[in-house]
Length: 146
Figure (cartoon, rainbow, N blue to C red):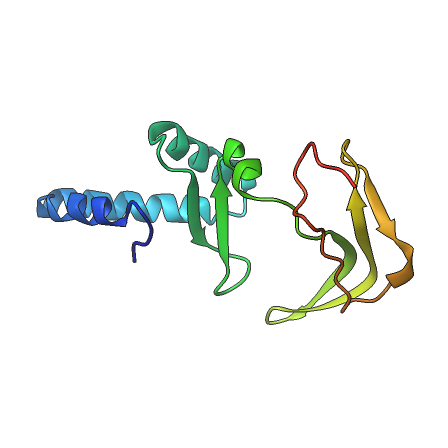
């Protein structure tokens, strides 16, 4: 399935290929998918960087998670992060995987602010409250501070 601004150009590209080219594309796609879903982060990172360098108009790559069934991972160009994203909230917890994607959380701590230098300011009033969320408003990006 293709989504987003580039989806139509990809569909047109595939439709213009002869059957042998489509087969080669599918083999390449399978190879890249397996590489991106590798347990080795270095391989995943390398493949994503190769794609970003080859196609400068691509800024985000989405691929399925190997660790969590149904999950989606994103590789995002570094220069895109702070132009389009910010930090909404930060929390620290010790997590233990129970089974089937369920986790147990303990020793939860929340950040109530971030200084301009990136130092985290911890909220001591809600320690160990795993259901509490302390949203940072506005979204934090480097250069902002409370």
